[in-house]
Image (tube, rainbow, N blue to C red; front, side, top):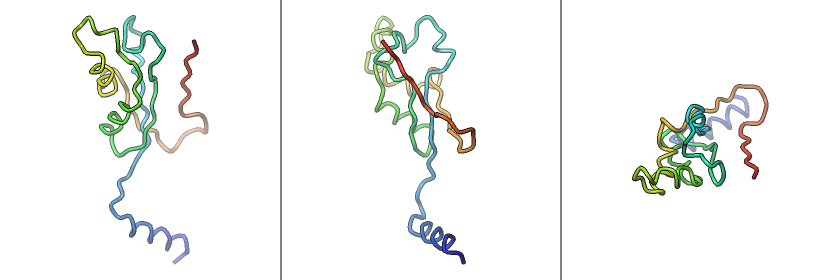
Length: 118
């Protein structure tokens, strides 16, 4: 048995139940950003993309809440939503945000670059 194979077998036996994680990219849906009014307007103090490492989409969306900006705050107050409720729901709502797995294969390049200048 090669030294590498022996090492890998040892790692698997030490961490047999370690979950398989993936990288997830969350961002506003393009059709939502084309609306005249949406949770990312005005476009400052908002989070526009998040990359997280976790096992599944549900947990990825929950982790995105931890870095949420002011998405939705102030816009939907007129509709009876609380500001905190809406900021959280933006990242949980599949109709407002995409959450896709970043695959290993692909061309070399920047994965996330999101700059807003005032």
